[in-house]
Figure (cartoon, rainbow, N blue to C red):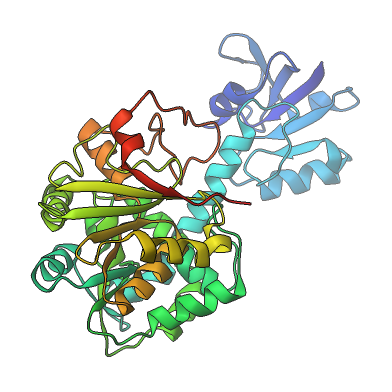
Length: 403
């Protein structure tokens, strides 16, 4: 068991003591230069000593609890205490030998410090001090699609990272050709195709605080600059978060408006769903209940781009010209919606709308597992077993298997 002293009987002493693992360490005493405190006992059990009292004593660690630790640390080293025996509570150190919660505390301190940097970096765009892309809200996008039967290609973080050659979505490995195709779609000026990008620049008041900070973290560094370089400052884009209308928002008003608008798009339509295996869109909820019919083509849930030509050809073979094609297939969906729209089909990249709808109907406060469905943000340890669902099996008209 480690033998330790704590320097500082002031305000933070109790906090430090609370984080010491008493199964690994014994507190021999608390050192303080305040003579009024010396000779007393902190919490009626731990003696408060003067600095000279530990001279010559054997111990494993001296923990400095005072917030202004610089002078104390320097004095300890000058008195001959080896630096390896000194633990400064307020330093961002990975040491866990005597603390129960040190890793969590240090991680929290680092995150707080980074959040300030992220917010400062994002502020000029949020306050309209620097120009941002023109991005219309999701509700306006869905109303437009309902009126003109246009298609939708969405770009999220994963698509932009693919263009930038970065590793982002766990379900799609980086691919140069995919990145080039995504860039082609992004630059398209076809009036039949709506291009949506995430509102990661301004209007953060509507987002939950943690969602806004996660956006700021993603956009920090070169990311925002790289994305802006890919965009046309004179073009009108739409908000890609249209497919994520619930979880990241402070209240449910946005979801209350968006979900009925989506359902209106496929009301009394024949819907062909192109999805990764285990997505199971509309199963276990009434998201697709207003459709006249639903059929499905199942694709690999991971690295679907490897089978893209097979997927495209299968859709062209099976799709009714009048059907509404809804695609949830990661970055592959963006290109597929584009290629189908170019061939005269109406195709919508609907992303994670089904997961969002499940959480919305459940009143979930955080992203959580959905039994029988793959949730992109929670890839590990999910229950993907589906209870016997005869209607679902009947809807499958083709299946493309992965490698």
